[in-house]
Length: 296
Ligand code: NDP
Image (cartoon, rainbow, N blue to C red; front, side, top):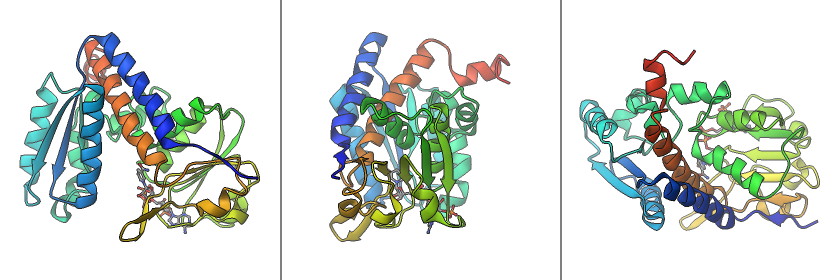
């Protein structure tokens, strides 16, 4: 069998088109602020891609670049200013933060207003996602779900196995698949008989960070394989967490790396900016709900 290739480019374009259509109906220009601390070259590439996508869709985009030795207080003050800026509907702080600020990461993420938290990392949005009230879900897993929908790959009643339990990919992916009525198993570095569990997956999500970890013998024939991993194996070569060549011969559908999930992530960020703008326009944001005591 040769798997159907799920092209990130194709599905990212669909996600962006839908985001643009929704933005046009809103009658305002969605605005995204990206805060980058330090000069991590990989982060700079990601940030440029986010700005490019905003430009492509005609969104307002602001880049706040702070030096690597910026204090926590200064960074929090920048977030406060962006929280109060009505032209900015979404804020994200590019991770990782420089080593000196890494202990403050959660405090920094928590400072972003939940209604502008387009990365979906704020505990309010994490809680909303896990209680089925999610509207700003983390971009990578949310983009994967959109792709499965566009690709007509059923999730209802399917066994989804996720390798990885990070807060940004594995756990929210599990919540989103549960919401689609999949039966979800999460594996991690302490999982026993990992290959046996993975072989049971109708939908397999690999978010490990280990090059070509998933081999062909671990995949059920016909399974859908979503490779979230991005691993640099040579100065200029990126590979996923899945052995793409071999697994393509077994899987029913598979995402490539590069050209797969990474593109969906940026596209979904655009959708989240529109969703955030819409919530703010409708006065339906999480903060207001909290203030009015409407949330449990
Ligand atoms: P983390 O390092 O936070 O999590 C990795 C997970 O993999 C952990 O839960 C870990 O288990 C698990 N793991 C590690 N080794 C094994 C093993 N031998 N067997 C089973 N499980 C294992 O990574 P992220 O979730 O942040 O990212 C995962 C990958 O996805 C990375 O390559 C990253 O670059 C990529 N990524 C790609 C994005 C995109 O847009 N395409 C966006 C975000 C990430 P444990 O918890 O027990 O340690």
